[in-house]
Length: 533
Ligand code: C2O
Ligand code: CU
Picture 1 (cartoon, rainbow, N blue to C red):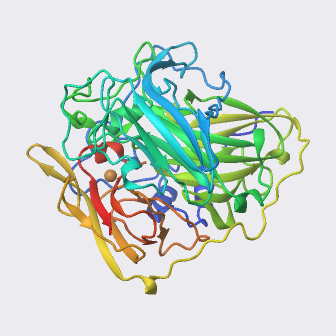
Picture 2: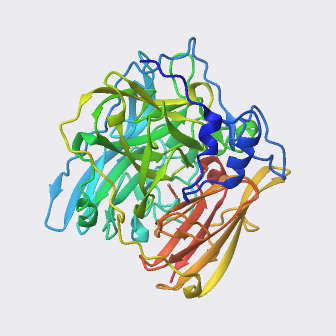
Picture 3: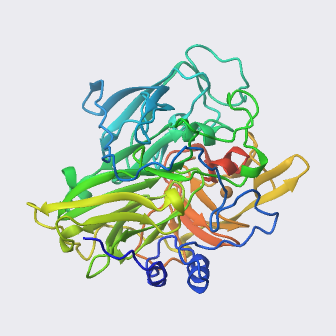
């Protein structure tokens, strides 16, 4: 059954051709040198990457201290159980969850302490349908404040998880609390009207200055939002639809999570030790909270709905071995749901917080074959992501992509009322590096933009080195991108990059943020307010 390992050089050469966030510089550099599996990022012009920076990644690898490398493909892929509402009405489903400490078996035979929603990592799966609201009451039994953000949601400002809108611990909190937000004691009910198209959303902690460590500890989960347009496509569903939350973590000798916080209590000083200021890279990749799991599939078509919940790591995914004929993936969707048309790809990049929806056809693989979802940008424990075991013929008809998937209005630059510029940069100061948007780190009262409701604007984003940029409350399109029309909420900037995004500010009015989704950068101030007026 053993196929030769795939030729990564060949793969990378063929990897172009889909317009979704594939920085050309990575591709070219990777093809020219002998390290084809590593996208190459130029050293940032503002200062050296410190510590053991992994080639091609913004950040530093935090090395696990396990006695032996964990065995791969010995644990089945867990699928997060869908949470049941505590109450349903005609217009809304009401849920209750609690942020609390728990344990998880991430590595075989080891118990890892985590902080999770309902004490699980990842948290429970939320499901919703367009036209019906979701209410989530979050109680906080952790020792620190939490903030819940539904990433990709079009959400009224008071429920969006603005970083200063703390839900304080039920037991009280005497650590540092940033002023300026809507503070809730013990619990808070979020209202998510979800008037938006079907997509894979995810939720995570967004506490001012401490998102990095709190997400790392496990405050993260998936949310599948559906609608009729998507239903009509008859996509692979049920056990042929797999929500996959991918992230990287590092572990101490007995399986405990490592993270280089300056103040591990997460009560006072924020930030990470200097060596990790560009980002924390775990050295083990997890899917749905388990390192290198396996999953049994039939010789049929499967829908993989992937979200990257890494603090800083970027990925390039492919299948190993490749199918004997054709390409492994039909890409059908991105952050904001279905694309206008499918795109056939051999591999695809994902930056932190991005989502990709792909259909894989296992029918050309033999029964008994093992097919690994592989990360071409990884090394060691971050290469093999998930092993599929082909167990037999499928009893369902295969899904074949139609020419058009979805109605995606393409926004036109000539309809934009203005262009704004945002420069993302790391600036060394006597007190350590500052991560800025424009000339500033985050200021509670500083407003970087105040678009009028309904206006279309172009935002030009430029970078010194890699920054995955996220805008709350709206979806945008990336201009100068020749893939099928798609809605995004994260755009991945590579080194010395410039990208233009275009959006119509027709969601809720109020104060929202844009920020870098490298969580270590975000925690060091790479965030800005914008007001939809
Ligand atoms: Cu995924 Cu501001 O967040
Ligand atoms: Cu950044």
